[in-house]
Image (cartoon, rainbow, N blue to C red; front, top):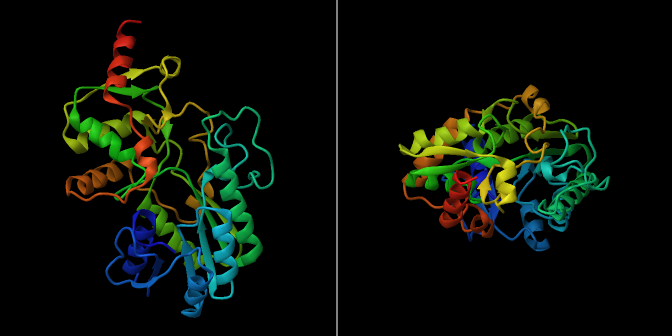
Length: 330
């Protein structure tokens, strides 16, 4: 479901690499279907198109990378429930009631089962988490033991359309003095889209009962400093990093997560345990490899599909300069 860009395309490419017979189902309006995949054009919000997809089966597995809301996922999983032996649904860590304030495991309640923990900041999109949690609930009702739920955190890599890593790469390419947010040793745990894709294919093949996995990199997989230095190395930039304290940045109006991608002060952001997935075979490549491959993709002239979220990522040059000047004058 999807298959023409970023994670969906990575899943299709990985499945083809394994020698599978692969069909992609999308509207045919964005991205490019992988060579070697059979395409069924359709709109997943259209009952008739979904019935056509079901009739083209049965399918050993359906991997759903594009189910963004509860009503859409409910329609797909009801219509396709008898057409697939396995259904892998890509959700998000935002479903947890404790996100992003608490350390999280798969055993903790979602927003379909509990209210958000007290103190969730206003800049956290709780409504998105509720919608995805309700989507999971609908999928469980419709699919039972045929369902695998994957809950990734931040996904990076070539073709990323949100714009987090591409923004950092372009900013560091320009060089000069870079505003580096927070502390250098802040752990971060993004995952490469290709590693999520490989794990999704693993579970499509191996899943035999209802299962849920957080898909996050291991603890101490990377730090904010190792990430930014990988960006410097990949681009060949002469940029220098100037680390500004988190409290200072917040006091001076810097927006975490968007203006300075991957930087967030909430303690649960990077403490979502992926141990269960790692025990089941999730392998996360070094973040430096993700950075280098994404830079090679950008340098080739390729562009991600348009997405409104990309416009919200990255700090304006004049604001960055003003923050650095204020830091110098403190």
